[in-house]
Length: 303
Image (cartoon, rainbow, N blue to C red; front, side):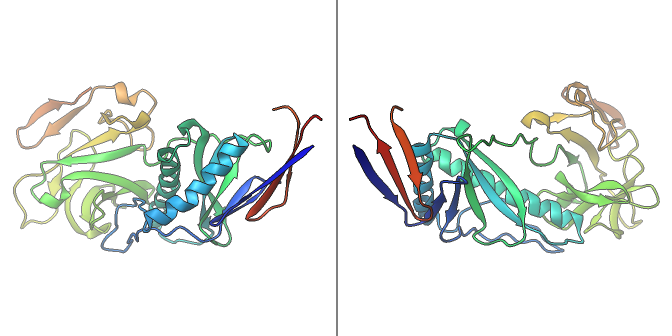
């Protein structure tokens, strides 16, 4: 005796041989701007949430039928970006989009431990992403390291208010990390060819306001323009390992912080007070046939 049934999908198609679930139409995202003078935070928000949920509901039905894990795979087209800061911003945006789809699947009922996400390089963007069924097809989820930067800079006490706050690394300049304010404005911190660190606009040292030989050390920052006066900033390196914000050793070289840097005590020199400040330390046979938006499944039962 045989029992035949089929599942029809309106928004996705599935290839049972490869475990790839493809979208019929792409998911649209809220736009994010990257320009010379302004960078939006690379967050991921759906432009049409209800339509996204319709697509993901079908993905969930397929994943539950196969009773296996599923990966969200977002595409990154192979393109040459001369600006490494732009490349890092784009990588973070795509990773956030993959995570956003994953989170939506979990919110809609898939167990968190059954959903993964990643970004793969492709030649053509197509629909922007697909889903992969795992385990049943001999694959296991890729093991990936932490996403996003492992540290940020925290600036306090600047007389030029817009330079206060956190700065995220994005690319390099003169073989050192370069930083931009987390709000995405023109405020940056860069390393000059003369061996000084500069607080400047769009990494243009000619438009700097402060400089210092040490990024986050005992030496105080100084004004670069004689017309400027008043408070000068204090810079701290904040280690983000393990998702915790802890102050790393001020003497630790950027880019070489060791694993236990987050447990080290820190101290900074305050040019305002001239004092040291301490930091916080089933039976039967199953046959799957066909591909595309229709999947036929036959069960062979004992007579």
